[in-house]
Length: 433
Picture 1 (tube, one colour):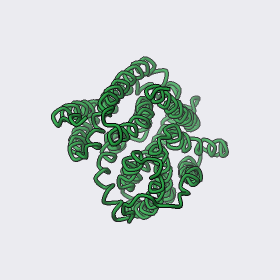
Picture 2 (cartoon, helix red, strand yellow):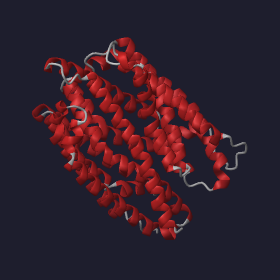
Picture 3 (tube, one colour):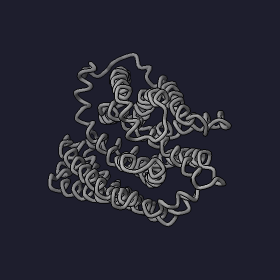
Picture 4 (cartoon, one colour):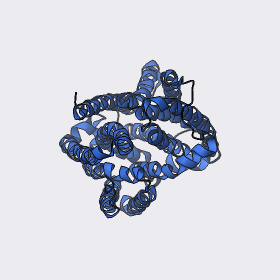
């Protein structure tokens, strides 16, 4: 089998695994929305259920975001360092992963304390109806969500793209789904939906660790690089702004909708945003195969790098365009799956789909800044795009509601895509290949 065919096959497997996770996630979200929002109830009761759904979606967003900050960029470091290793250096990758666990335990504990200390202000600003004790218990999700992420990225670095997708997406959703079914009769009452989400992150974190442990049993260190925690943090921190800014670009709208509008609007907007991310899940499936391959070719077969870069770029741009158009045509039916009340977010979803496609077009161009160790330029572009997003959100949400938040994302992603490509050519990042 040719290398191109193997690449396409691994990409297809990654896409299948990724969409297995997507299917579980959306099945779970639809189920939760239906449980919390009684379709036969009067509108006032529906709005209460939608507010509870909005609180749960905000909790997912907050845990994901704070966990990302606490990882200090080590997820990117795992891929950057381990993906380019040859088989005889895999022992170093295993040792690096073990040290990263220690670093993340320390940093996660710090951010959990931060969560608890500032919980009165965070809860009042972003949530409508969550008790303080349940809010503080949810901080455990930071540590265990990090475990899931680190273990998924370790598989990604080992070129096991389908395993990466299943652990990162399917495992948390499956854990939550099992708990929802187990506590079906009591789920909508007494904030149990918040507690079950917290418990699901713990279950998923432990399960992911059990999957990874056999791969970490490497007895001999074969590559001489310092594995001290301070040294690891020093190497990972320059990579952190890329991930953090990317997250804020994706989720700052949801957080700002929570700041300026009520929880029911968070439920509507976050659902539209989640559906729009289906296209990014497809991108993530490609990313799981493309990025490790780019890293490997840049260091081991540089003569093949340029050709592979443009093939990968074409696959991302045109593959995602087809997905975006298809999803745009099905925008209203997809929202209706959650309940007819969600059809209010149709226009927001169409705008967000366009924004996510624009973001996707810059994937390979952006990653070249990491390969060429010019991350500072990418960080500058993303920070400017984030500022555009935040300013536009402040103006447009107050004026146009959730549609304004979607337009803010479109404006920021347009700048991000154009600036990444223009700077890529200006810096001549392919000149050495």
